Image 1: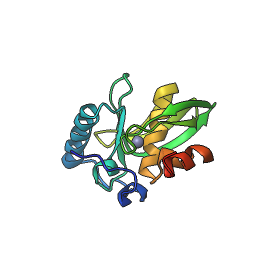
Image 2: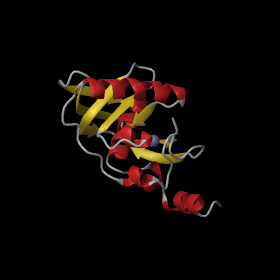
Image 3: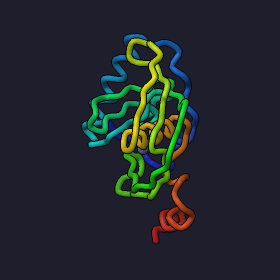
Length: 153
Ligand code: ZN
């Protein structure tokens, strides 16, 4: 499946909340995990495959995390690292993110769970939650980095 790329409208729209975690949603989650691995990603948001739902999957090597209607409850610390995105292939931007986050989300059974993450995983959570709110890494990149990207300098 083709991943939606920078410039496509659906990536810029805040996604709709998942109303009910049912078998369809569980199938979608399984499909998204497969697609994430197929594209060598560490995260994938539903709108990146053209589906307007507030749902993302993440696996930075700690196992699959499912984020359904995720909300950041707490964010602490700060780190700056280069970050890429399947929707901006081959581009990397230095992005400031919290070092630690606590996220509340529904799991695949519709249970509200609190997930704690740090470093790379916290970064991936924030990246995916940004997607679900219609934001991309280029929005957070510095002015000069954005300019370089826009004008292909
Ligand atoms: Zn991304």
